[in-house]
Amino acid sequence: MRTAYNEELRSIADSLVDMANLAGSAMARASSALLDADLQLAESVIAADERIDDLQRDLEARAIALLARQQPVATDLRVVVTSLRMSSDLERCGDLARHVAKVARRRYPGRAIPQDLRRTILEMGQLAERLMAQAAEVLLTRDTDAALQLEQDDDRMDELHRMIFHHLMDERWHHGVETAVDATLVGRYYERFADHAVSVARRVVFLVTGEHAEDATAQTPA
Amino acid sequence: MRTAYNEELRSIADSLVDMANLAGSAMARASSALLDADLQLAESVIAADERIDDLQRDLEARAIALLARQQPVATDLRVVVTSLRMSSDLERCGDLARHVAKVARRRYPGRAIPQDLRRTILEMGQLAERLMAQAAEVLLTRDTDAALQLEQDDDRMDELHRMIFHHLMDERWHHGVETAVDATLVGRYYERFADHAVSVARRVVFLVTGEHAEDATAQTPA
Image (spheres, rainbow over the protein chains, first blue to last red):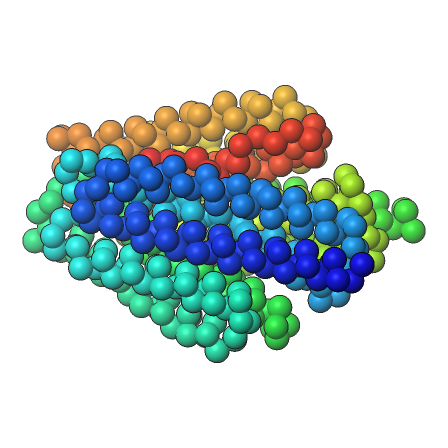
């Protein structure tokens, strides 16, 4: 009985890592689609989000079945409940990657991002991918130091997000309103993606240490 | 034992209704602060969000305690797990009201919203408040018809959200980029708020009928 329980718990943890990997890869590809105006890539990101949604639904069903059958208490119970919440974070990250891809699709064959914002968006995309890889690592290793590193990297994301706004508010901005709207939305998508990655890491830290960090999603980006 | 259990379950349901009422009221006040450039009101919305966050943390602790002590199965288990997810939706709605209030504060003593967007934003604010009141109603009554009505009202929110973009993309837009960025963000906040209200109602419907509607948060706003 105990072995079956541990196996089920491990399979839920594995699914979370799978979701994190898929979400990170989706955001990386969405960023390429955005910067290169690659319609085919954008479409593939949009279509692939279903896979993450399926994983979440499946994870949820298994978590509830496990609660019903095994009736865990204390730490085990908290692990299962927290897994449910982390799966919501990761499912949302898939949505945000899809949103970025949709901006790319909407402006095709044009490019949504002008040259002078390219470097910032490129860094946001890479940082988002890295943050999610770190979150996956934290899920696997439960390394609280890695989780702290993630918080610091998220500070850089906030900085990049602010840089977009400074750019948009600059009098020399000459790309018009449509491009400003796109950049505003895309900036927010990356920033939220990073928040959710941080949130996953924080939940792992909470499971390990029992200490509650402030909820990442409570932070305001702009 | 059974009575204690039912009382705990009822108290969790009551907290969800409290959270919905607070979130709806916060968004209504944030909308007034935004349209009237009322700094004091904006500050009060920003400060009051803590109350919703506290309610969520408290609800989560009680739900986990209930799972540990009472070991519910089948429908009861699903009610508790779903309550946890609904509390996340509602906590996020509080954040979104706070974000709207922060836009008002950032532009004070100016107005973030120009006259020609005023009517649209006013309707979005009222609709957001109404959607959340309906979600609270559905939580209380478990009336699946009311939940369906909510979906229809959310279609109007999507329409209003699109109207903002049409406005921004119009060649006659002459309010500059800063105002366009504010309107883009605010539009997104209302739209996400509505999504979460619909999500709460859908989760109730799922509890009642066992039929899974597509997740509201999976929809793209723009």
